[in-house]
Image 1 (cartoon, rainbow, N blue to C red):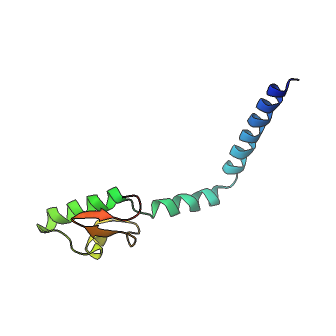
Image 2: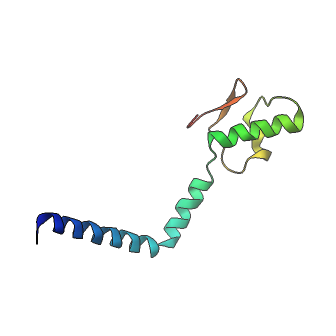
Image 3: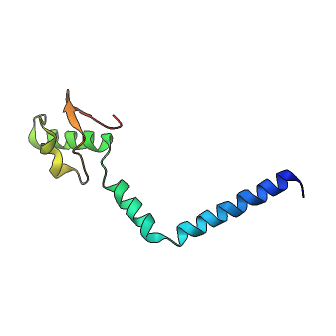
Amino acid sequence: MRLIEMATACAVTMSIAGTSYTALNPPKLEAQARMVADKATCRTVNTAIVGFIAMNGTDPTKIAQLRPYVSGDISRYRIVKGMAAGPGC
């Protein structure tokens, strides 16, 4: 067996083992998915700002005003010049 064939066989074996471990550990996968889903993105906050303006006819001044428009954690964001500022913006 050549070295490249052995390396390929090892890579395939490790890939199958990793996939099997993931498939057999659904609680960990679910916990990770929930953690990611609970985090809001910059786009989410900007969309909430647009929704707030549409409903109220004025710009929001505090991030707390956007809580009814967003499901997820937006505590790390702030509003700067009418746009979201924070992680990923």
